[in-house]
Structures are given as C-alpha cells and as structure tokens.
Length: 438
Picture 1 (cartoon, rainbow, N blue to C red):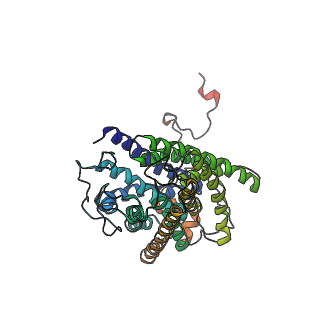
Picture 2 (picture 1 turned 90 degrees about the vertical axis):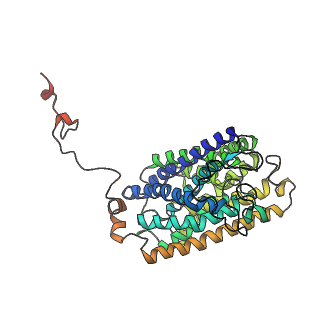
Picture 3 (picture 1 turned 60 degrees about the vertical axis):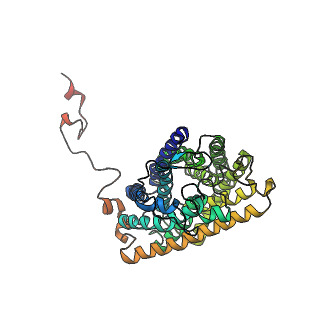
C-alpha cells in the first residue's frame, strides 16, 4: 500500500463529497423561494440512497471483473475487502478508499439530474427514480469507461479497454450521462406551469455564487484525484481545472453582455460550471493551451445551447442539458484534438498533436454510446415511475409551492413576531426610550 497516494485520494474523496451540498446551494438559489427546500432535499437524499446502493452491490458491479465488457460481478459486494489493495502502475490504494472516491462521483451525477425537473417533482418519486437510475444507467456506464483491465478486476469495461476512448474524470459517465438523462426527465415530466411566459427568476443569487464556488473547490478533488496518485498528472489536472473555467467565465460574460446588454452573476456562476464540465474528461490529457480552448468553447457554446430550449420547447429548468450535456460533449471531442502524451504517457496524441483522426473517432463513439444509453434508459425509468406512483406534483401544489406540501416546511419564515416577553430576546413592538430609563 502507498500511504501517500492513499491520503491524497482520501482528501480528494472528501472534496468531491462537498460538491453535492454545493450543488444543493447552487440549484436551491436558482429556484423560487417556495420550492428551495425540495430542490435541496433532492440532492441530500441522493447522498443517502446512492451510498447504500454503492456499498451493497453498486461498486462491485461497476468495477468488478467484467462479463463481456458490459458489467462487473458481485465479488466485492458489501465492501468488506478491508485489506485489498487496488491499482496498476504503483498506485497502491486500498480498495475501500478507491470505492469511496468513486462513490462520490455516483452521488453527484445522480443529484445533477434534479435540476432538470425543479419546481414540479414529488420527493419520494424522485428517490425511487434516482435509486433505479443509479443501478441501471450510472453503474453500467461507469463500468464501461472507468473499469480498466487489471485495476480491480482482471477484465474491465469495453469503452476504455476495447475501444480505447479517453475520459480522465467523467465526461461520459458523469457529464454526458447527466445531460442526456436530464433531457429524458424533462420530456417525461413536461413543462412547469406558466413556463416560459411567467418569470421564474432565481430567488437567491448569493446562494448560486456560493454553490458555484463550492463546486469549483470540490472539482479539484474530482479532477486531480482521478490521477489516483500525487504526481505530475494530478498537478496538470489541477492546473487545467483552473484555466478552463476561468476562460469560460470571461467568454460567457463577454457574449452575454453582447447579446443581453449586461454581464450577470448567474451567468458567471453558470460559466464556471460549464468550463469545469468541459475540462473534466480532458484535464489529465491536455496541456494549458488545450484547457484554454476548451474553456472558451464551453463559455460560448453552452450559453447558446441554453437559449435553444426556448426554441425547442423543452423545460430543462436549471439547464442541465446545455451545461453538463453539451459541455461534456465539447470536452470529449476537443480532447480528440488536443490530447498529448507529453502530459500523460498513458493517454494518446490528439489530431493536432500528430495522433491522426483515430482518437477523435473513438471519442465520438464514446459520446454517442453514453448519450444514447443514458437517454433511452432514463426515459423508460421516468415513464415507469410516472405510470406507477406518479412523478409530478398536483397543479395546485406546484402553484402554491412544493416545500409545504412535500416537507411541511418553508425555507423562510415571514410570519410576524407575536411574543411580548422581554426575557425571550424577541420583541413584538419597539420599546420607547422612556420605558427603559430609570
């Protein structure tokens, strides 16, 4: 066992875990005040259900010895392999530590989907959906792209080992998966009442900015930690995780000012996430120039993609499709142009670094496979939940607010103060100066 690498991955796993509460703030600030608790609760319950699924059998199916490159087995069910060590190339990480690092990826990916159905989903229906989705959508995709031959099981998934597609930290299993699945959810549940005629502006932009900052902070663990060793590749991933979102923020704000007349805080937060999404699959394979190009592309293209939902009429409430789906596609494909072995000898040279068109073609295949699988299975699962237990809240609940109906709580208490007790520290009315003087 390598204690240095183990400590590094443990810290990175904790950073990635922080991304889910960060996402709850990011999403919670973007919805209306009457549904903010429901929005945040969908992220928090995902922490619970996905963690248990992963411990019981999810990790084993995702990373266990492969059956035909499609799915693992049950050899590691229960995660009782306390003495097992995984890792080719001298990583030397305990299996349980690696499993916890990968768990955080599964949690944040499931939580991302909730943004597409904000303001209109039943809490327990969402819980059932994300549980099924983790097993039937995320686990197979994670096996296909993350399970390398000889790392945990002798044989791994087909996208990584047979096709040879590159995906350093989750462009397919996390980003494209969440974007395609979010589109399926949005189509099954339908539009929010009044969208797009009514204004549905974010109720708390400071929440959004704080959430985006926590996501960016956690993303260093997401990307650098995917090296699974504290070395040069992790360092490069860290640097590119700064460069790409920085470029995306500037590109987004310039375009937003040109199109809408003002740069906005919501635009800056969205841009940072878009740049982080784009660099996720490429951070360990491209240099700073490649990261710059990817960030600029995400800042422009993802913003334009958001505007398309009004033309096509699908209500992806918090723009999961445009930011995560399109951003993931950009990162995967541009990596086929800008990847270089000078950064990571275990990778490949992209088209612009003398590698030919072959790697670019592999990246395109991986994009199409991930998007097709995620959309098709997610659509079927969402339809099944809607048909059996109902997925959408009643119209009157949607109009009045989901928080009270689903959770018997409200995020903000606006009722007047009623106590006259001076000892309680709460005053029902102002106290005159004369009443307090002796």
